Image 1 (cartoon, helix red, strand yellow):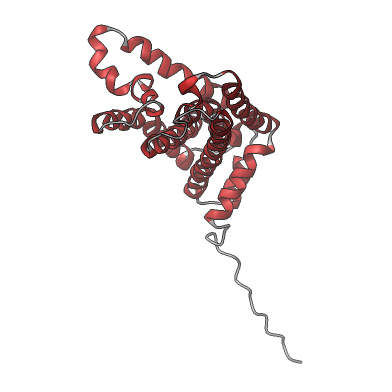
Image 2 (spheres, rainbow, N blue to C red):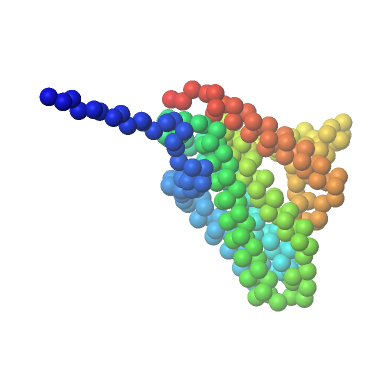
Length: 255
C-alpha cells in the first residue's frame, strides 16, 4: 500500500492584501455608504450648483467673473468637506468596523494612507464640480473680462479645498469620534481667532490664525511671506493632529 504524498499549500501571507489603489476605492465607497455621508455629499453638490445659479441670476459686475465665482462655488466643499473627512476616519470606530478593517489589512499604515488618498481624490472631484459650475455660470453671465483670472489663483483655490478636507481627516484621526472631532474642528480655530485678537498676540495670530492666513488664498495670488504663513497654519491645524491621529491608529487598541 502506498501512502499518498500530501503537499501543503502555503497560506497567503499577511502581506498578501488588497493594493493601495483598491483600498482607496474602498475608502471612497465608505464616504457614501452611510446615510449621513450620502446626504452630506448630496447637499454639497446642491449648494455648489445653487450658488453658481444665484450669482448668474442676481450677481453684479465682478461677482460674475470666473475667479469670483470659483471662490464662491468652492465654499460648500471647503466648509462641509472637512465633515466628510472626519466621518471617513471616525466612522470606523463609531460603527465598530475598525476591527474588521484591520483584520483584513493588518498594516494599519496602509489604511491611513488609503484614507488620505481618498480625501485627495474626493477634493479633486469636489473642486472639478466647483470649476464646472463656475465656468457655466460665467459663460451664461457673459460679463466683460469674465475669464481674466490668474492661473495661480485657481491652483490656490484647489489647494484651499484640499487643506480643509485633510484638516477634517486629521481631526477625525486625532479624536476617533465624530461629534467631538467636528465640533473641535470648527470651534478651536474660532476660539484661537478670538484669543489672537488680543494686541499682545497679534504677531503670533498672523501666523497661526487660519482666518487670517488662509482666507486670502481665494482672493489673491499669495506672496512668499503669505505662503510661509499658510504653511505654518497648516502645520498647526493639519499636520500636528494628523501625526497624533496616525500614532493613535497605529498603536491604539481596537475594540
